[in-house]
Image 1 (cartoon, rainbow, N blue to C red):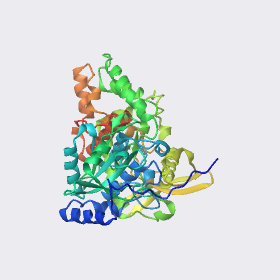
Image 2: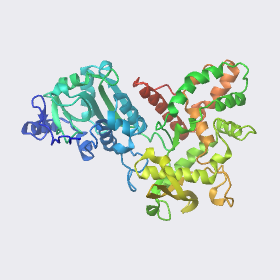
Image 3: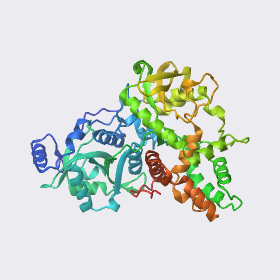
Length: 502
């Protein structure tokens, strides 16, 4: 097979673009800086990166913006460092598929949501050039919001097709936008006329048949999630979508169900076998050799918050009812929710393999790890007693990864540290917790089909977020938003409106 011809960059077609490093580009930069419409530029350029794959322009643009906003990913990138990288942005689309095909506008917006950002997205048919200019001026005049444009290169006389890049600034006098092109191996940063950028965004993506556009990304005033997140790395979302849209409405039509335990039993027994895969725990992970004998202040504070939320889950009446269902004489066979699933050995093996996958930067490889050495241990924390840590060695082929995973344990349950029995059941990570959280996170409209008005009122009270502590309520509403956006982006019907939270 003949080798592919290599290229060293491309000559930037000018006009219409003005190269950032040219004399004219420097003049435009100086004037825009003086006018205050380059406020976000320095945060973006401080963390700027070149896309690592030809089709990773969307992932690279999002990584830059998330890091510029100082959003904490909540998990390690490499070593002890938490930092957004393209390899970590895989919750809405497998990386191999993005590498081969790129990513669509809606799925990039979904990724931003799952990463913990606040996102407002606009396709060209949902906005106007005047609206776009207004949003660009506002984002360019702020350090708290950044704009990513999805556009076609052809109007700029550039080679290639669809592309994503952050917009680093705006020159009001010349009505020009500064594109910080993440394909730096191809084109340098450059200024373009805003009307031409609008024309480039007002083009159809052949992959979806929908127009391109732009999205505004900012950070939430508080961390959107501490303990739970939606995961779309497997196909559980498909079965859950069918469950919510088809199975649940049919179940609710059954007028013979006249009490909450009976209704919960029907709902739980009908859950897809992989339902628990949709909601994941956000767990602290570190390399065993870097962990030392204690916890850092930062690790300790996060662990305390997670334990508080875990206790709040288990304080709910819904948790009590769901737990009772898990330990009846006839457990749900299709879901395999038996106490064996929560044994020390199973938890330790699963958690350590997850940790090894996180630390190697390959989240899709979790199932490729097996645990050779696994145990629970306790770490003394000043002023807060003992904390539980799963420690072990996960093996994948010839590669080994020693990991520590820090587990929040509810004080309502028997402490691992005080247990003398290797067969004792621990409730972390517990399927009962996941089931409880999943039922709380489903949108309230899911339950409108309950025929018995008394039962409907009782059940809606049981799953109402109005009865939750503020910390748990934020977690549940965050999951509810994630579920909404994940479903929308999977169906390529992504829109900005957030579902009402009740």
